[in-house]
Image 1 (cartoon, rainbow, N blue to C red):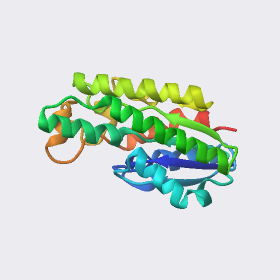
Image 2 (cartoon, one colour):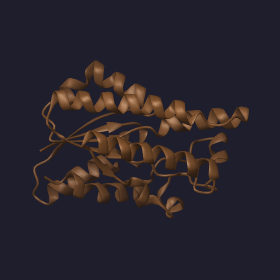
Image 3 (cartoon, rainbow, N blue to C red):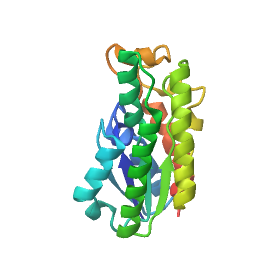
Image 4 (spheres, one colour):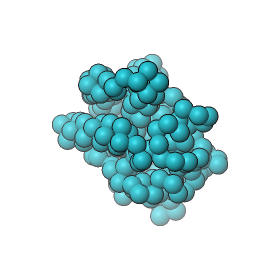
Length: 212
């Protein structure tokens, strides 16, 4: 079985202590330990938005996606984070509708391309909230997750509720977690990525979705 992971820095493995401890490789090794024969591919980079992922798929995704049996899509956090931080700096509302329109268009195009290249099961992941003490983050991420759920339903994809796996546990699962407020992202490194424990939680949650 071939598993292909598409995404941004979380899927890339940012802030895992090694690539082997990223959720995607943990999931592959766990499934192989259960005697499933599974190999993994990845198309993900830190900082990628849904637009960047779509562009990468259109440029070189065919060889990676073709032959896949299951594909996960975890993207959109950077779309929202970039807009949120910009809005925070200039004290303006987040352009949620603009983000939603662009994100929806890109996800539809990504799924269409996957379906063209292979007959894989497609799993779309929701976004966890790294800033649970900020009302702005709570509402914005909830809106993005509602849209992701609608996109999964309309496209026949499977929804993986990764946000639920982190809810109430962010301080334990996020690398560099401080106050759980969006303002934390304005001073120094971004406390948004899973630590090793967070990657294990994601892998454990995803395994049932990846099984044949």
